[in-house]
Amino acid sequence: MVLMATEDVLGELRALGQTFDSICQVSAPDQLKARIARLSTEAAEPGLWDDPSKAQKVTSRLSHAQAELSKLDKMRSRLDDLGVLFQMAEEAQDAETLAEAQAELTAVKASLADMEIRTLLNGEYDERFAVVTIRSGAGGVDAADFAEMLSRMYLRWAERHGYTAKVLDTSYAEEAGLKSMTFEVLAPYAYGNLSVEGGTHRLVRISPFDNQGRRHTSFAAVEVIPLIEETDHIDIPESEIKVDVFRSSGPGGQSVNTTDSAVRMTHLPTGIVVSMQDEKSQIQNRAAALRVLQSRLLVLRRAEEAAKKRELAGDIKASWGDQMRSYVLHPYQMVKDLRTDHETGNTTAVFDGDIDGFLDAGIRWRRQQERAEAGA
Image 1 (tube, rainbow, N blue to C red):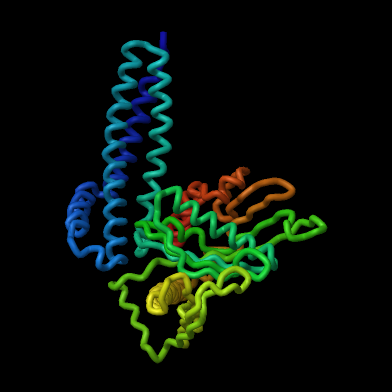
Image 2: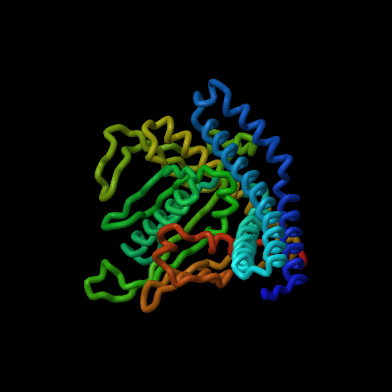
């Protein structure tokens, strides 16, 4: 005889159905279908790939919309099938069928939790592609090596999800690692997901560069900004921009280009500097540098507006600390986010791009902070 808490199961199924309905209200399947139809028409235009940048955006957004609609359709079917499965187990009083139904219930809960994160990405720029910059901080060669480890971590994260990542600029350190790297993640909601990664990251380990085998602490800074779009209207007068050209270089200063194709662009009023050297021509590097500069100015404008609002509200406390995550490899292994308390002992997996748990926790934490500020 199989004993089942029927009312408990029905209650869980009703709760899951309500959660799914809430997700659908935000995801809007009908709007997704209309978006897919529009993007499919754009993707079929004969001259689409005459503009590779536009083509990348159209195909990426089409793929993302199709995947979102497919997830919703599959989840609706899974919820329907789950109810039938529990009903079959109850009628047959079959332990094997019950175990299968309970395993599927657990899996559906996890899948809905993942889908629910998407509903929290409703900020003004959350849907945008992302521009990520990692810079080495205090810690010498260990910090440069840490910057390279973080760069690989985020690039592997993008690869795991099938997202296109395009390196825009790489500045190598003299001995090992990176002074900095900038790359784009060309996927819808890349900014919304990765924006919670912005801040100071700390690494504690036995330094491979210390011949006495001592423990070192090093730091790296991560900056995440939304990729600028034509509709943002960030106009920069030519008189406010200083452009320097130089030859691209590889590790250790080795020249990888015999022409002055790399570009360093300085915004004179703010002092913001953007360097680009990974494109093949000076014109391409200049366009990429201008795009990133516009994105940083957009973020600066938003930060100034937010600061004014906080000043008017009398709220002077910072939402983000200088140090937001620690990666400890010695004397124990642990990666811990200091804002959310999310942690894992599998440091190898994290550095191999398995950071979704940290992203989800960060997104939920950010929403909590926003609600708390709104309440205050």
